[in-house]
Image (cartoon, rainbow, N blue to C red; front, side, top):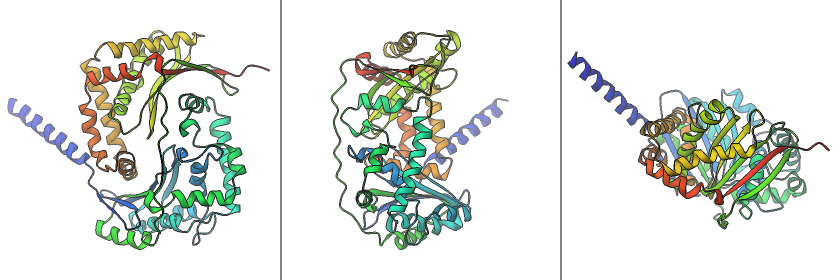
Amino acid sequence: MLKLKKLTCWTAGMFLCQQSMAQKVEFTEYDMPNGLHVILHQDHTAPVVAVSVMYHVGSKNEVIGRTGFAHFFEHLLFEGTDNIKRGEFMKIVAANGGENNANTTQDRTFYYEVFPSNQFKLGLWLESERMLHPVINGIGVKTQNEVVKEEKRMRVDNKPYGNLISAIFKNIFPKHPYNWAPIGSMADLDEAKLSEFQAFFKTYYVPNNAVLSIAGDINISQARGLISTYFGEVPKSEPIKYTKVEEAPITQQLVDTVYDANIQLPMISATYRVPGMDSRDSKILEMISTILSNGASSKLYKKLVDDKKEALQVGSFNYALEDYGAYITYALPNNNTPLHTLLQDIDEEVVKLQTNLISETDYRKIQNQLEKNYISTNAKVLGVAENLADGYTFHHKNTAYTNQEPEQIRSITREDIRNAAVKYLQPSFRLVLYYLPAKNS
């Protein structure tokens, strides 16, 4: 029995070791003469390939009076190219067994296709067409303007709590372009001239401001040749000039009230301006949010929802961006619980983190949860492609950050968690927002 137990432990240890080794993402990267950064990850596990392009442009690259451009281009660059008829882009993808989409944040725009690997060339051609030959004309601008307006009505204007993040960011980023949401102002888009859209494209959607990240069933040497064929002729542009706008520290608690006609229950939130995603403290704050509100056994959920039954919903999360982050806590009341009571209860749990080290059990649990999230993301070729592009774009051109993340998670100590809570989550450093149902007129 003793030998069997030792053998079982040894086998389990080998399995865990193999799992750990399998988690490392191997990749090849290089720069093309036109400045396009290329990242290639070969994985023959399944006959699929993800082709993605991350442009380092988001709403923070816009200016007051012309907001919403980056998100607008997320839509506009599906309109068509010199060689793809208007409205045919997505049809081509679907007809060849693929899927595609795009998304925009304050910091970047991400386009992708996932194809059966025998359609790898098609994915490269589509993205090279988007970069080299897009048709940006009055018809496309007008069409996508209506699409964006409908999206804003659905996701912001008519959605319960749809303006929460916008209201928060307007207060904690009074100077920085994070002040406005990526969807921007419809009035700005209406007033913009076609030449302004064309100029925005020529400035930002260029190879030296992009990462071509490919993951899946490819041959590295063949891929390099194909990439040269499809992207080599794209001309290099002038370097992108971006200067971070520095915000003065928040030194006393800010309080604001917002009214929303789409809600019946009020909400209270407390938000702290914190470091950007390239800071180690950003990962520590993610761990703090895991302690406080990830799952039914988390501190806030157990206290406010299960035990005291004061809240219908409670949570916290670290909204990590490139220049800064926003650490947000929030709660919706149950049984007419006063909002200030909810805030007080949340604050009590934060003070516990600032005063005492979390238990070893909680410490191991949150480490496991974050590592599980990491592994789940890298379980798909698209997740790998995006993680590799993120590492290069947002971690000082360190593409290997995706492999270093688990080690970083394991390096964070209980003392680090306590110290970060003390450093960033002070009442005098925050915005308290009362998000209330609109008053009857």
